[in-house]
Amino acid sequence: MNKVFGRLMIEFGSFLGRSELRKLDFYSSRAVKQQERNLRKLMKQNKNTVYGKLHNFGDVKSVEDYQRIVPYSAYPDYEDYIDRMANKGEKNLITKKMIARYAESSGSTGKSKLIPMSAWSLWVCQCFSFSAPVGCAFKYFKEKKGMRMPPQKGLLTIEVLAHKTPSGVIAGGLAAHPMINLKPVTPFYTTSPKEVMFPKTRDAMDMHYMKLRFALPRRDVSYIGTVFVTMVESMMFYLENNWEMLCDDIEKGTINESIACPPDVRKKLLKKCKPDPERAEELRREFRKGFDEEAIVPRIWPNIGWLYGMGTGSLSHYAKKLRRYIGPDLPIHYLGYAASEGLMAVPTELDSFEYVLLPQNGFYEFLPVDAPEDSTPLTISQLEVGKDYEIIVTNMSGLYRYRIEDVVRVTGYHKQSPKVTFLYRRNQIANISGEKINQHAFDILVNELSSTVGENFNGYCIYPDRTTSPGHYQLLIEPENPDVPDSDCEKYAEIFEKRLCETNVLVPPLIRNGALGHCEVKFLKTGTYEEYRDVLRAKGANLNQAKPVKVLDNEERIEYFFSHVRESLKK
Image (cartoon, one colour):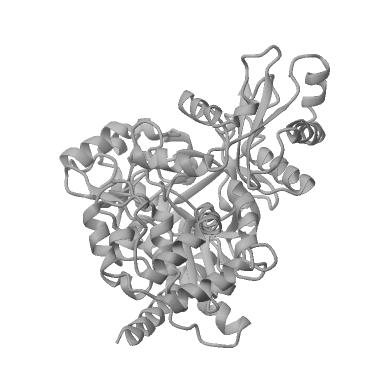
């Protein structure tokens, strides 16, 4: 029965995904008119809302009117309205549409943002973040492998933590909402028990262990799903260091006593664990061969066919590291370009870093990164391939000309709809003496450093140290190899600074003139980044949405990461 239902699920999911991709073709062929239609519709529907009256939506008759009359916005412009919507259920404040859900930001520091989601936005998210990847995989199996897509049973790293606002509307991370809708059928497409995938509380639970504990006994795992590829890479690193414990527990049908888990949940999960000495020994044979000569994932799961998760922009370093575990040929669906404010662009095939903008899901404007601040932004028909733009979003749920401060590069066009790839967040800039180095540049520099020294890094962060005279950059690295000697810090710093000087013309004269000090490298203790995830979890952060820390830009991060510098390197 389970296999039959699993086959029906994959058939329906792939059908829905392929249908949505065909609709994207339709919308893309009419993208310019669709954008104008979206804008007219939004202005007409919402002209009598509080926000619409305040900003004269009724006077907007064209794109030019919109850009002239309606100002740019950011979350503080909506915060009071959204609080009233979420807490008291007030309507017609920023939109006439019914709010079906709230997308919640990571909340790693301070108060989480709540972004309203209309029923339309929720449906687009459901179709393009869950079904469309399946549709792309279906197409891959048919065209590349000449076969029908087999029934799918996957290792999902996603944890769905959601709650209800005082007004009774569900709030959770953007990635959680498609999973909430599919909760009744999760046993048919994932290896994780509901107690793990849908934890009822934020009580401490070792999720890497739990997800691997229920995936490893199965030989039929056929895909791996995540939000950010960092999670899979981190999980595989955990596996590399804890496989003996996992195999022992699979053999005995137990959950190791050292693993954090609420007692009532442990009791339920133990009932699902059956001794399996044969599979445990099969796994041990593969793990004993090591993780370096041949990728481990295809060896322990021979039916593995694909993976999905965001892995571009600042995450590309982790996507590269992940290949050590999954091999060079396993195709990846990179999900697309999304934020809590909405799903904006998706790839239409596996292994593509180009995402087609969804012209039906809002109205988009683009401000060239080198343009003066008072420039009029461009619309989708005015973009140049190869140029970088800050994207300004008007979504279908009540945000207008919203500056999320993301920078994307236009890589081409799909009919009338631009193809983009995410680069970096515009506000994540390190600056000491006017050199203004963005996160994307640091990602490239650290990737090149990793390649030059022949070592992988579990993570890195930059600290613009202005306490010294002159100020200088400190690069904090967690080496994957714990045996990298402290004496290599100086060599790493020289390589990093040399490339920094070669890629930023402002840096060499600043160093020569004494306005910028020499770069410094420090090694972090093994497990630093993994422990930081535990810190975020304890604070109630949504780990599905949390991105790796790259710039130390607040006291909490500074204190944490410098407290984890190797003892011999502390001053």
